Image (tube, rainbow, N blue to C red; front, side):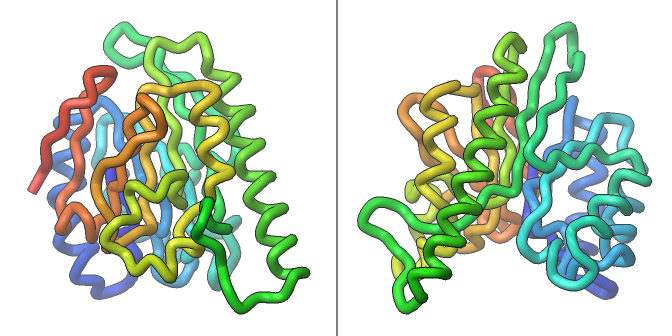
Length: 241
């Protein structure tokens, strides 16, 4: 799993991660991409990443991030990735047969908005309400997705924004409100998946939890350019250089 790749022409990070992603695709049963896959949200940039993922022999599951909406809209990025055989989850879920197990993934971009004691300052009430509405819609989509995969042997929630402040530690507290929302935690508490995977917090912490559920921040920055390898349901961790 990884995220915040920000793929674009001549990207040092994309070049450095190229072989690591290919190695991960050979070693893993699934590859998870946790959003901000492109720098400016263009189909061209999505094609760069899709070209790497086309070399994988395993399913690739992705959610989009805020950067993926920037220029051409999320539809352009999602379309380019889907054309390459990548599954893009946008508030929905998928079930896969992996090693004799039914693996379910519920995916959504998620949203920012803040946490108890950590709010976004200096915005209008109208803007605050709009942010809250989007976070509530994303949380509801995550709930529906997790409910749909309730019968799976392994259940994973995949998103871009963080559902907990645990994995934001290392980031300036003043920007935590822009990095995730506490509303995303409610469906996690209710459905208790085996793992939550997100990105977006470049200077955050790798691991946190919501109750007994492990939460992993797999931002490429947090992983120092590596790709995280999670073994579920035991949730062992290693890295691919």
